[in-house]
Image (tube, rainbow, N blue to C red; front, side, top):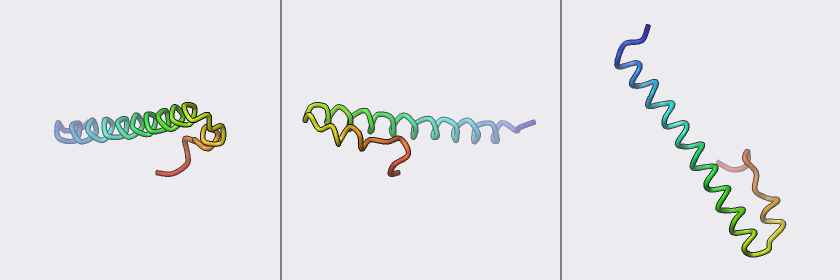
Amino acid sequence: MLTPEEMIKLTTAALDHIERIYKRSWDRKDAVADALENEDREGVEAVAWLSGA
């Protein structure tokens, strides 16, 4: 059983984690969009989920 404080801490940690995932996704989506706009195939191929931060 979790205390109310522990549940709040757990929920906050989960939401923070999800927020970081969304940010990484949008950063990569924007990088792909920029590369496509510039017709930069190497730029598209350089985008990877596990690279960088």
